[in-house]
Amino acid sequence: MYFLAHPEDIADALRAHLPLDVLALQEVRYLEKLEELAAGLHMRVAVVLEASERVGLSNALLVRADEDAGLVCQLFKLDHPVETRAAVSLELPRARGARFICTHLDHRTEEARCKMFEQLEAAMLDDEPLFLMGDFNALRRSDYDEDGWAALKRGRAEAMVADTESTLTDRIQQKLVDCRNAAHKRLGSVITSVFKCRIDYIWASSAALATWQVKECKHVWLTARAGREKAVEVKEGNLLTDHSLVVCSLELNESAAAQAAAGDATTTRSAAGKRTKATGIKVKTVAKS
Image (cartoon, rainbow, N blue to C red):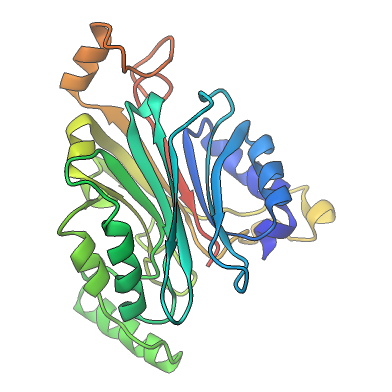
């Protein structure tokens, strides 16, 4: 896994997107490499959880290095007979207490993914402001036209992928909103995986969108830059991960911004401007596979 071997190169590619307020990572195997990545981005590891010793993969949430200590964090084990997966969450003061959840669901069957989401859903309150993000290994039917869906099904059948369904995303959309759909501006191809499909998402609750508007959502492929070849043994332009970075830039809605201007005690801690550094939260998520 390239990211695990050379976190400095991932950090180098991510610097174009600084400052990051939340960075969600999946398939973290070596925790010392995670700390290196966080330091390279002027962030810190807020919470990390290994799904199981057998698989040895973890999910993690990073926050800015100057974020208050003592964040409210939670850990979730998502059990299934095939494999245990995990999720982590934190409540972010500079996002007016919104909760951010990072997860990575099973890659084999829709049945397993749905069972895992059921366990995670049980921990979500109906009226809480939350953002759910990560690699869901799940398809969203409306991302494809008829020809695209048919081609996707053929390709997955040839690759002996167990299913081509959208049961999970249909269920999630009964509770949460796809931030790419909600965005004022969408950039990049809808595809987030080298397997020519979208499986990485940021979802938001209605309560979150009552406070925050999604100004922009973009999918960005992270590549090595020139001059790194000797250090990291990769050519310029090579992909650093097999999933794209999913970027959501959030900004306070007018009513929430008015409260902040009036001196609301829960406003974000910043000195100037109306964009991300002051009243907006940039949410980033990157997955490995």
